[in-house]
Image (cartoon, rainbow, N blue to C red; front, side, top):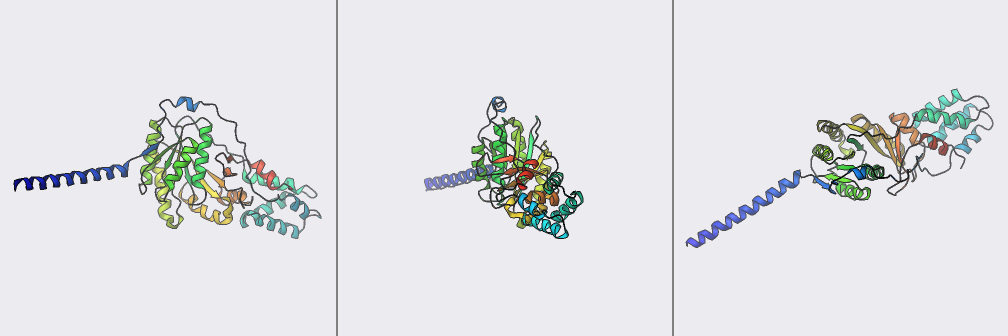
Length: 344
Protein backbone atom coordinates (compact mmCIF):
# COMPACT_ATOMS: atom_id res chain seq x y z
CA UNK A 1 0.00 0.00 0.00
CA UNK A 2 2.96 2.30 0.54
CA UNK A 3 3.48 2.82 -3.20
CA UNK A 4 -0.16 4.01 -3.56
CA UNK A 5 0.50 6.70 -0.99
CA UNK A 6 3.71 7.70 -2.80
CA UNK A 7 1.90 8.02 -6.15
CA UNK A 8 -0.93 10.00 -4.51
CA UNK A 9 1.59 12.36 -2.92
CA UNK A 10 3.40 12.83 -6.25
CA UNK A 11 0.09 13.58 -7.98
CA UNK A 12 -0.78 16.20 -5.38
CA UNK A 13 2.66 17.82 -5.75
CA UNK A 14 2.33 17.90 -9.57
CA UNK A 15 -1.09 19.55 -9.36
CA UNK A 16 0.21 22.14 -6.89
CA UNK A 17 3.23 22.87 -9.06
CA UNK A 18 1.04 23.30 -12.15
CA UNK A 19 -1.34 25.60 -10.30
CA UNK A 20 1.49 27.79 -9.03
CA UNK A 21 2.92 28.03 -12.54
CA UNK A 22 -0.44 29.21 -13.94
CA UNK A 23 -0.84 31.77 -11.15
CA UNK A 24 2.66 33.15 -11.75
CA UNK A 25 1.94 33.47 -15.48
CA UNK A 26 -1.32 35.31 -14.88
CA UNK A 27 0.25 37.68 -12.37
CA UNK A 28 3.12 38.40 -14.73
CA UNK A 29 0.76 38.99 -17.63
CA UNK A 30 -1.38 41.50 -15.74
CA UNK A 31 1.50 43.81 -15.00
CA UNK A 32 3.72 43.14 -17.98
CA UNK A 33 4.53 46.01 -20.27
CA UNK A 34 4.98 44.87 -23.85
CA UNK A 35 7.13 46.94 -26.16
CA UNK A 36 6.90 46.41 -29.92
CA UNK A 37 9.30 46.44 -31.62
CA UNK A 38 12.49 46.32 -29.55
CA UNK A 39 14.19 49.69 -29.36
CA UNK A 40 17.20 50.09 -31.66
CA UNK A 41 20.55 49.79 -29.92
CA UNK A 42 21.84 52.90 -31.70
CA UNK A 43 18.91 55.30 -32.19
CA UNK A 44 21.05 58.21 -33.40
CA UNK A 45 21.02 57.17 -37.10
CA UNK A 46 17.21 57.15 -37.00
CA UNK A 47 17.05 60.49 -35.24
CA UNK A 48 19.26 62.18 -37.82
CA UNK A 49 17.94 60.34 -40.85
CA UNK A 50 17.11 62.52 -43.82
CA UNK A 51 13.44 63.48 -43.66
CA UNK A 52 11.25 63.04 -46.74
CA UNK A 53 9.73 66.08 -48.48
CA UNK A 54 7.32 67.92 -46.18
CA UNK A 55 3.61 67.40 -46.74
CA UNK A 56 2.38 70.97 -47.02
CA UNK A 57 -0.04 72.73 -44.68
CA UNK A 58 -3.71 72.46 -45.50
CA UNK A 59 -7.01 74.15 -44.82
CA UNK A 60 -8.82 70.82 -44.92
CA UNK A 61 -10.32 68.83 -47.78
CA UNK A 62 -13.88 70.11 -47.37
CA UNK A 63 -16.03 69.30 -50.39
CA UNK A 64 -18.58 71.53 -52.08
CA UNK A 65 -18.26 74.95 -53.60
CA UNK A 66 -16.85 77.89 -51.70
CA UNK A 67 -18.91 80.77 -50.36
CA UNK A 68 -17.34 83.40 -52.59
CA UNK A 69 -19.97 83.47 -55.35
CA UNK A 70 -22.86 83.42 -52.86
CA UNK A 71 -21.36 86.28 -50.85
CA UNK A 72 -20.86 88.41 -53.94
CA UNK A 73 -24.45 87.72 -54.96
CA UNK A 74 -25.75 88.73 -51.53
CA UNK A 75 -23.94 92.07 -51.54
CA UNK A 76 -24.36 92.82 -55.26
CA UNK A 77 -27.08 95.38 -54.62
CA UNK A 78 -25.58 96.77 -51.41
CA UNK A 79 -25.95 95.80 -47.76
CA UNK A 80 -29.42 95.84 -46.18
CA UNK A 81 -30.93 94.26 -43.06
CA UNK A 82 -32.01 91.35 -45.23
CA UNK A 83 -28.48 90.98 -46.54
CA UNK A 84 -27.02 90.63 -43.03
CA UNK A 85 -29.72 88.16 -42.05
CA UNK A 86 -28.99 86.06 -45.15
CA UNK A 87 -25.25 86.18 -44.38
CA UNK A 88 -25.94 84.73 -40.93
CA UNK A 89 -28.09 81.99 -42.48
CA UNK A 90 -25.30 81.21 -44.93
CA UNK A 91 -22.81 80.82 -42.10
CA UNK A 92 -25.21 78.59 -40.15
CA UNK A 93 -25.60 76.29 -43.17
CA UNK A 94 -21.80 76.08 -43.32
CA UNK A 95 -21.76 74.70 -39.73
CA UNK A 96 -20.28 77.81 -38.15
CA UNK A 97 -22.71 77.54 -35.22
CA UNK A 98 -25.35 79.98 -33.88
CA UNK A 99 -23.17 82.03 -31.52
CA UNK A 100 -20.15 82.15 -33.81
CA UNK A 101 -22.31 83.08 -36.82
CA UNK A 102 -24.08 85.88 -34.96
CA UNK A 103 -20.83 87.30 -33.55
CA UNK A 104 -19.12 87.10 -36.92
CA UNK A 105 -21.94 88.97 -38.71
CA UNK A 106 -21.83 91.77 -36.13
CA UNK A 107 -18.07 92.17 -36.55
CA UNK A 108 -18.18 92.00 -40.35
CA UNK A 109 -20.99 94.54 -40.37
CA UNK A 110 -18.95 96.93 -38.25
CA UNK A 111 -15.79 96.52 -40.34
CA UNK A 112 -17.29 96.32 -43.84
CA UNK A 113 -16.77 99.62 -45.66
CA UNK A 114 -19.49 100.89 -47.95
CA UNK A 115 -18.77 99.70 -51.46
CA UNK A 116 -15.80 97.59 -50.33
CA UNK A 117 -15.16 93.97 -51.30
CA UNK A 118 -17.10 91.82 -48.82
CA UNK A 119 -14.82 88.85 -49.57
CA UNK A 120 -11.82 90.79 -48.25
CA UNK A 121 -13.74 91.82 -45.13
CA UNK A 122 -14.94 88.30 -44.36
CA UNK A 123 -11.48 86.85 -45.03
CA UNK A 124 -9.88 89.32 -42.62
CA UNK A 125 -12.49 88.38 -40.00
CA UNK A 126 -11.82 84.65 -40.47
CA UNK A 127 -8.08 85.16 -39.99
CA UNK A 128 -8.76 87.30 -36.93
CA UNK A 129 -10.92 84.55 -35.40
CA UNK A 130 -8.46 81.75 -36.10
CA UNK A 131 -5.39 83.67 -35.00
CA UNK A 132 -1.82 82.77 -35.96
CA UNK A 133 -1.00 79.18 -36.91
CA UNK A 134 0.69 77.14 -34.18
CA UNK A 135 3.13 74.56 -35.59
CA UNK A 136 4.11 71.58 -33.48
CA UNK A 137 7.46 72.36 -31.88
CA UNK A 138 9.25 69.74 -29.76
CA UNK A 139 12.53 70.21 -27.89
CA UNK A 140 15.40 67.81 -27.29
CA UNK A 141 14.02 66.02 -24.21
CA UNK A 142 11.25 63.41 -24.15
CA UNK A 143 8.12 65.16 -25.42
CA UNK A 144 4.71 63.77 -24.42
CA UNK A 145 1.56 64.24 -26.49
CA UNK A 146 -1.74 63.23 -24.88
CA UNK A 147 -4.53 62.45 -27.35
CA UNK A 148 -8.19 62.52 -26.29
CA UNK A 149 -11.52 62.20 -28.09
CA UNK A 150 -14.69 60.14 -28.29
CA UNK A 151 -14.71 56.64 -29.76
CA UNK A 152 -15.28 56.78 -33.51
CA UNK A 153 -13.75 60.22 -33.99
CA UNK A 154 -10.66 58.81 -35.70
CA UNK A 155 -8.44 59.04 -32.61
CA UNK A 156 -6.46 55.83 -33.19
CA UNK A 157 -5.96 56.66 -36.87
CA UNK A 158 -4.81 60.17 -35.98
CA UNK A 159 -2.26 58.81 -33.50
CA UNK A 160 -0.89 56.50 -36.17
CA UNK A 161 -0.66 59.28 -38.76
CA UNK A 162 0.92 61.68 -36.29
CA UNK A 163 3.46 59.02 -35.28
CA UNK A 164 4.30 58.40 -38.93
CA UNK A 165 4.74 62.10 -39.54
CA UNK A 166 7.11 62.44 -36.59
CA UNK A 167 9.07 59.31 -37.57
CA UNK A 168 9.42 60.71 -41.10
CA UNK A 169 11.05 63.79 -39.54
CA UNK A 170 13.73 61.53 -38.07
CA UNK A 171 12.32 61.26 -34.55
CA UNK A 172 12.09 58.09 -32.45
CA UNK A 173 8.47 57.66 -31.43
CA UNK A 174 6.68 55.49 -28.88
CA UNK A 175 2.91 55.04 -28.62
CA UNK A 176 1.27 54.15 -25.30
CA UNK A 177 -1.95 52.12 -25.47
CA UNK A 178 -3.64 53.65 -22.40
CA UNK A 179 -7.14 52.97 -23.77
CA UNK A 180 -7.38 49.63 -21.99
CA UNK A 181 -11.19 49.60 -21.97
CA UNK A 182 -12.23 49.43 -25.62
CA UNK A 183 -12.00 46.01 -27.26
CA UNK A 184 -9.25 45.76 -29.90
CA UNK A 185 -7.95 49.28 -29.14
CA UNK A 186 -4.45 47.93 -28.46
CA UNK A 187 -4.51 45.73 -31.55
CA UNK A 188 -5.48 48.65 -33.79
CA UNK A 189 -2.77 50.79 -32.29
CA UNK A 190 -0.21 48.03 -32.86
CA UNK A 191 -1.11 47.93 -36.56
CA UNK A 192 -0.61 51.69 -36.82
CA UNK A 193 2.66 51.47 -34.87
CA UNK A 194 3.93 49.01 -37.47
CA UNK A 195 2.85 51.31 -40.31
CA UNK A 196 4.45 54.35 -38.65
CA UNK A 197 7.66 52.63 -37.60
CA UNK A 198 6.97 53.48 -33.95
CA UNK A 199 7.28 51.43 -30.77
CA UNK A 200 4.10 50.32 -29.04
CA UNK A 201 3.99 50.18 -25.24
CA UNK A 202 0.98 48.25 -23.95
CA UNK A 203 -0.41 46.07 -21.19
CA UNK A 204 -3.31 43.64 -21.14
CA UNK A 205 -6.86 44.84 -21.63
CA UNK A 206 -8.34 46.07 -18.37
CA UNK A 207 -5.00 47.28 -16.99
CA UNK A 208 -4.87 50.59 -15.17
CA UNK A 209 -4.43 53.36 -17.80
CA UNK A 210 -2.33 55.37 -15.36
CA UNK A 211 0.05 52.44 -14.92
CA UNK A 212 0.38 52.14 -18.70
CA UNK A 213 1.22 55.84 -18.98
CA UNK A 214 3.74 55.64 -16.12
CA UNK A 215 5.51 52.61 -17.58
CA UNK A 216 5.47 54.22 -21.04
CA UNK A 217 7.31 57.29 -19.77
CA UNK A 218 9.93 55.18 -17.99
CA UNK A 219 10.39 52.83 -20.97
CA UNK A 220 10.64 55.76 -23.40
CA UNK A 221 13.26 57.51 -21.30
CA UNK A 222 15.28 54.30 -21.01
CA UNK A 223 15.19 53.75 -24.78
CA UNK A 224 16.10 57.27 -25.85
CA UNK A 225 12.71 58.02 -27.36
CA UNK A 226 12.05 61.55 -28.64
CA UNK A 227 8.25 61.64 -28.59
CA UNK A 228 5.71 59.61 -26.61
CA UNK A 229 2.10 59.70 -27.84
CA UNK A 230 -0.43 58.52 -25.24
CA UNK A 231 -3.80 57.14 -26.38
CA UNK A 232 -6.75 57.46 -23.98
CA UNK A 233 -10.26 56.07 -23.60
CA UNK A 234 -13.19 57.85 -25.20
CA UNK A 235 -16.35 56.38 -23.72
CA UNK A 236 -18.60 59.34 -23.03
CA UNK A 237 -21.39 57.23 -21.50
CA UNK A 238 -19.29 57.13 -18.33
CA UNK A 239 -18.42 60.81 -18.48
CA UNK A 240 -17.27 61.56 -14.95
CA UNK A 241 -15.11 58.43 -14.46
CA UNK A 242 -13.60 59.08 -17.89
CA UNK A 243 -12.75 62.68 -17.09
CA UNK A 244 -11.28 61.65 -13.74
CA UNK A 245 -9.19 59.08 -15.59
CA UNK A 246 -7.83 61.68 -18.02
CA UNK A 247 -6.85 63.96 -15.16
CA UNK A 248 -5.18 61.02 -13.40
CA UNK A 249 -3.14 60.11 -16.50
CA UNK A 250 -1.89 63.69 -16.70
CA UNK A 251 -0.82 63.58 -13.04
CA UNK A 252 0.84 60.17 -13.41
CA UNK A 253 2.90 61.35 -16.38
CA UNK A 254 4.22 64.21 -14.25
CA UNK A 255 4.91 61.79 -11.39
CA UNK A 256 6.95 59.64 -13.80
CA UNK A 257 9.21 62.61 -14.40
CA UNK A 258 7.85 63.94 -17.69
CA UNK A 259 5.45 66.70 -18.68
CA UNK A 260 2.54 66.75 -21.10
CA UNK A 261 3.70 69.10 -23.86
CA UNK A 262 0.56 68.92 -25.98
CA UNK A 263 -2.98 67.64 -25.44
CA UNK A 264 -4.78 67.14 -28.73
CA UNK A 265 -8.53 66.71 -28.96
CA UNK A 266 -9.54 64.63 -31.99
CA UNK A 267 -12.86 65.78 -33.46
CA UNK A 268 -14.79 64.28 -36.37
CA UNK A 269 -15.50 67.25 -38.65
CA UNK A 270 -18.61 65.51 -39.99
CA UNK A 271 -20.38 65.64 -36.60
CA UNK A 272 -20.72 69.43 -36.75
CA UNK A 273 -22.35 71.03 -33.71
CA UNK A 274 -22.90 67.64 -32.04
CA UNK A 275 -19.15 67.17 -32.03
CA UNK A 276 -18.66 70.59 -30.47
CA UNK A 277 -21.02 69.63 -27.62
CA UNK A 278 -19.11 66.37 -27.02
CA UNK A 279 -15.79 68.19 -27.09
CA UNK A 280 -16.76 70.47 -24.21
CA UNK A 281 -16.64 67.51 -21.83
CA UNK A 282 -12.95 67.08 -22.61
CA UNK A 283 -12.09 70.77 -22.38
CA UNK A 284 -13.56 70.69 -18.86
CA UNK A 285 -11.29 67.80 -17.81
CA UNK A 286 -7.90 68.63 -19.30
CA UNK A 287 -6.17 71.62 -20.85
CA UNK A 288 -6.57 71.16 -24.60
CA UNK A 289 -3.78 72.78 -26.62
CA UNK A 290 -5.13 71.99 -30.05
CA UNK A 291 -7.82 70.24 -32.08
CA UNK A 292 -7.22 67.69 -34.82
CA UNK A 293 -10.13 67.76 -37.26
CA UNK A 294 -10.54 64.39 -38.95
CA UNK A 295 -12.54 63.28 -42.00
CA UNK A 296 -12.56 66.70 -43.66
CA UNK A 297 -12.65 64.82 -46.97
CA UNK A 298 -16.13 63.48 -46.14
CA UNK A 299 -19.39 65.38 -45.82
CA UNK A 300 -17.98 67.96 -43.39
CA UNK A 301 -18.59 71.68 -43.90
CA UNK A 302 -15.78 74.16 -43.50
CA UNK A 303 -17.54 76.32 -40.94
CA UNK A 304 -16.76 73.75 -38.24
CA UNK A 305 -13.22 75.18 -38.12
CA UNK A 306 -14.57 78.58 -37.04
CA UNK A 307 -17.00 76.97 -34.59
CA UNK A 308 -14.15 75.10 -32.89
CA UNK A 309 -12.16 78.30 -32.41
CA UNK A 310 -15.08 80.47 -31.35
CA UNK A 311 -17.00 78.02 -29.13
CA UNK A 312 -14.16 75.96 -27.66
CA UNK A 313 -11.48 78.64 -27.64
CA UNK A 314 -8.96 76.12 -28.99
CA UNK A 315 -6.97 76.37 -32.24
CA UNK A 316 -7.13 73.73 -34.97
CA UNK A 317 -3.59 72.31 -35.27
CA UNK A 318 -3.95 69.44 -37.75
CA UNK A 319 -6.50 68.29 -40.32
CA UNK A 320 -7.11 64.83 -41.74
CA UNK A 321 -7.45 65.12 -45.51
CA UNK A 322 -7.73 61.48 -46.56
CA UNK A 323 -7.31 57.84 -45.59
CA UNK A 324 -3.63 57.35 -46.44
CA UNK A 325 -1.04 57.24 -43.64
CA UNK A 326 0.44 60.54 -44.86
CA UNK A 327 -2.90 62.36 -44.97
CA UNK A 328 -2.47 64.37 -41.78
CA UNK A 329 -1.47 67.96 -42.44
CA UNK A 330 -0.68 71.00 -40.30
CA UNK A 331 -3.57 73.45 -40.40
CA UNK A 332 -3.06 76.71 -42.28
CA UNK A 333 -5.60 79.48 -41.61
CA UNK A 334 -4.82 81.38 -44.81
CA UNK A 335 -5.25 78.31 -47.01
CA UNK A 336 -8.51 77.53 -45.17
CA UNK A 337 -9.90 81.04 -45.66
CA UNK A 338 -9.09 81.02 -49.36
CA UNK A 339 -10.76 77.62 -49.81
CA UNK A 340 -13.88 78.60 -47.85
CA UNK A 341 -14.28 81.84 -49.79
CA UNK A 342 -13.43 80.49 -53.21
CA UNK A 343 -15.92 80.84 -56.03
CA UNK A 344 -15.51 77.20 -57.12
